[in-house]
Image (cartoon, rainbow, N blue to C red):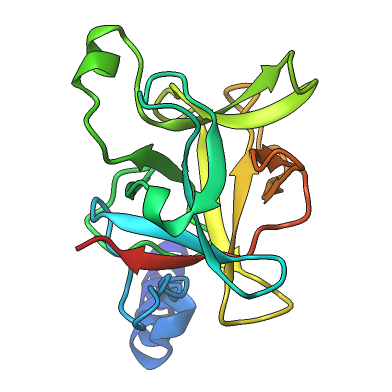
Length: 202
């Protein structure tokens, strides 16, 4: 009898907390990532990743270093060479908005039939380059194993930064590292963060 009363009181207390303080039960969603026009970035929509040049005189954009998406290196180049990309949450959700800190797959949105036929994807991943003697961002990634995230750049809230979040083992939550640019304009993990914005590709 005492156990029943205790359970009943516990249920009423939880119900009271849930109705009186909804934020105690439902965590607030992380902030939405916004494009250059202040609109929420949408999963699956096409965007250009743009960045200011080091002297702030021109706008640069993310693209690839070859004519084919298959196993190409991701680089920073002029705006007229930009390629659209799409973001998709690693964990599927009914929320269509891309949010800060969410683990994402990043894909180029160009023609990829030839890549897929060869078992290669236009998804971003990290690989070791024997030529550059370091890790770089390339295409050919695998879903869930190549996680990136977008966060506000701490030094300037008008910009975002991309980070790579390695997953070395099934139960490993390894630290995320910012994605920057090396001297050859390759996107690389572990460098000073590249300040980026997202422009709708219309």
